[in-house]
Length: 333
Image 1: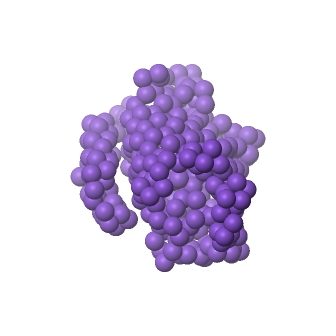
Image 2 (image 1 turned 90 degrees about the vertical axis):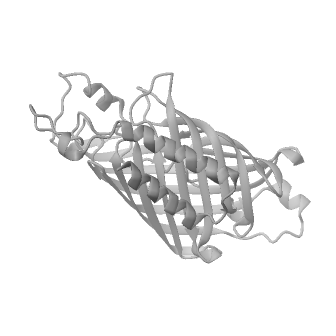
Image 3 (image 1 turned 120 degrees about the horizontal axis):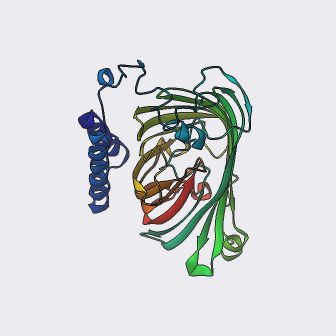
């Protein structure tokens, strides 16, 4: 199992990023290390059934959870494990979490990055997520759920008095479904990009683009073990300007699946993004560092090294190439 994960990571990195520099080798080494750590806790499927109860690795008692309620069910024999579905208004937790390595996902986060041709930049994302309605069991993250996500991704220039260069706005309304290690997402996504007033005043001749896309999004995630997530997503823009019709995202997340306490645990994330408006080029993002998961909140707090190589993650500059490295702090939903 561990060799399959490592090989898939190497092939993914070779396909998405043609440069093998020091940073690339370092991040790949971290990825292999994370997989080795996760492999220590891996048990083959035929050995994970309980002799007394006949429950599998993906049973409610042992399956991955981002819910405080289910976490307590792991140790509390009196906690209900009902399979009877019901409607839950504003449920706790999210069936389909955001992708850790994708720079475009709605989250709370900030990072200082050094771009090789542009110097220091300050990128921040101000976002949130709300679960509106779920049809499923009350004690675990399965069933069908309707969410709403929104975020503003801001780029500021420390070399120009913290001028705002651009802001990308995003709103998603997904319907998600989960059962065991399988997670699906189908929904609507809006992205629009806007240049900052200060930037336009100082760059009067800059060609302002009205970049936006309204898309239908289909995503799938698979958890071979609770700490590892493989995912892929496609989006077709039915209303757009500048943006191409198709966009594809794929990647791997390694993160603690249950509350960590104050000591935390390592995380690693790889993401590739392909967009039709740049002839199906795009960018590769890699992150590695330390993460914490709380007993009281469903999100994941992370800090660590970030590397990006490809077309700008700010869509107002969608056709410009960037290679950046930096340090960030993120809270993912």
